[in-house]
Length: 383
Ligand SMILES: *Cc1c(COP(=O)(O)O)cnc(C)c1O
Image (cartoon, rainbow, N blue to C red):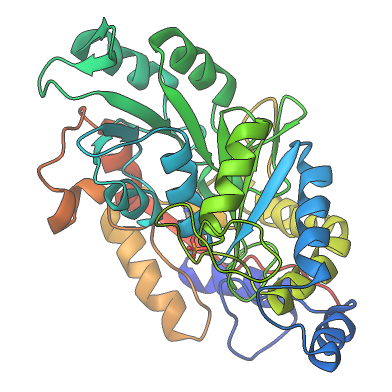
C-alpha cells in the first residue's frame, strides 16, 4: 500500500484518540506519585537524606536482577561514575556507537578520555559486535598495560554500547568480545528499563550499567539516573564518590577525596518508587501501542523497527525507517506541522564539532540509518 503522511497522522490520532497536539513521549502519573511526594514535603525530607532513595534503589535492583543499584541526579552522571569506577582515566580511549544521545560522549570526556566510534547494526540499531571485533582485531595489541590502540598508543579502557530506543543490541556477543580483549564493558541502558536480552535485563551484562529517569524516558523521577552492578566493591565506590566522598561520622564533615555531588534527592526517588509500581502496566501499554503500529506499517512500504530476535524491547520510542532522506525530511516537516510530534535520530556523534577528529570505522549503517529514522509518538495509554 502506498501511503502519505496523512495516513500516518490518522493512525497516530486513532491510537491516542485526540485531535490535540500529541507529544513524542509523555510521563504518566496514575499511582502513588502525589502521596509519596507529599510525604516527603510533610516530613521535610525532600533532599539528600530520606527513605525513598534506599527504597528506589532496592526496587530497581530487584527488578533488573542487579545485586546493587546506586541512584544519581541523572543518567549522564550515572554513566560518568560508571566509567570512572570501571577504571577509565586521563588519555584513555572508550569505544562507543555514533548513533546515540550525547550523554555517553560527555561522560567519556568528563573522564578526560576520548571516544572511538564503531558502527551499529541495522537489525538492532545498537552497537554491531561484528564491527567492534573487526576494529579491535585490526587496530589493537595486548600489552601488560591492557588493550592498546596501535594508531594512537593509548589504552582502550572501556566499551559502551547503547540499547537504542529500548531495543536490546547483541549484548552477549559484545560482552564476550570485551572479555577476550580485556576491556571493561559499561552498558548504556538509559533507554531500556524493562528490556531484556535472552531473559536477562539490559544493563546487567557488563561490569556496570547506567539507567536514566529523565522526563521523556519510560519512567521518570523528574531527572534521575541509576548505576547498576553485581560488583560489591564498585558499588561501594560508586555510592561513595556520588555522595561527595564523605566519610561516615556522627558530627564532622570529612571527605576522603574530591567526589561528586551526584546523589538523587529523596523527593525525586519518591516519584521513582511510585513509577516503579506502575512499570509493568506501562510496559504492557507500550507493547500494545507497538503492536498497533507494527500491524499498520506491515501493509506499507515503510519499515517499522521491531524488537530484535531473542529480545524483549520496552518499545520506549517507536521508530520507522523511510526509503530516503528526502522522504524522511518531508514527513518530519509535514507530520510535525499538524501537531503530531515526530523526531529524527540524533546527529551522529562523529559529526559534532567536538568529536569530529575521533577515530571511527566506516559507519556504513549509522550513516544510512541516521538519514532515514523517524521516531513517532510512543506514550503509554493509561487513564
Ligand atoms: C537519556 C539518555 C541518557 C541519560 O540522560 P539524562 O538526561 O542525563 O538522564 C544517556 N544515554 C542515552 C542514550 C539516553 O537516551
